Image (tube, rainbow, N blue to C red; front, top):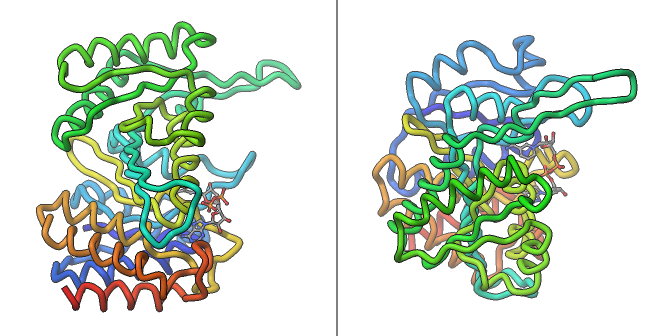
Length: 331
Ligand code: NAD
């Protein structure tokens, strides 16, 4: 597998994930590759050719977050990798954990985000001084295939409903096409309830009654924003894993970024990266090991004794990682 430690807290949380995967009994030959700000500094490019060659060869990666500067600098390498390898489905399971105190209990949301188009196509230009145009691309092909991915996921995991979240009252053509495609795909899955909600109202309902949602189906930009909102419901970005799936490969990564405010301090919450490692193990055919990692993280969080500061404790990244490994040993 390809391993991208990433920038900021990336190397800290990815090292935690590797240790836990190893402790789960799965031996992986990691091909370490540089990307992002670290690669730019070291090799003069944020996407070295070796990285692309490695991803083409392995088809699977565990990845830390990569820095993308706001309003300047190179374009997002995350977006570049997702588009280059056509990793069109971003899956972000967001679950409450006993022991992590939030105003909500039993949140269980699956965010399915289209990963290749929308405003993330990055087609922007200056029309005239002081006037900039940014183009939102929505295609029937990509909308249909992400809807199909969401419905197939829901069917496989016995989920009850899918809510397509949109702003088709304003973007009648683009978001209109997205929901028309979702409606068409929904007809093939009569056992799954299909509903639609406008994105602003959906955000309000998510923070007042998250239990009224199950699987959320969104375009790229709404998906990114709403998944961070969902992370807030369960205790923060340090807890939510993610996967970018294509037909031929996948990249697994926590939903959080480089967390520059805590990078290098050894206090980042490793759970999101560890659970992303568990999703990778599911994907490569080790569901038992994946389940033992999930059970161990659940028990560490539930006991509440070894928690990082983002979820109310004082533990370091290493202490929490060691606690997860100990909990696996007890099973
Ligand atoms: P961020 O997710 O890095 O941080 C937001 C807040 O959450 C910060 O206060 C941070 O300390 C906290 N946080 C994040 N992960 C945490 C963890 N594991 N444990 C404890 N606290 C954690 O978002 P940002 O500050 O908006 O972005 C920083 C950089 O990360 C930017 O360059 C952005 O482009 C990049 N980014 C990359 C990815 C990715 O590579 N997939 C995703 C999001 C952001």
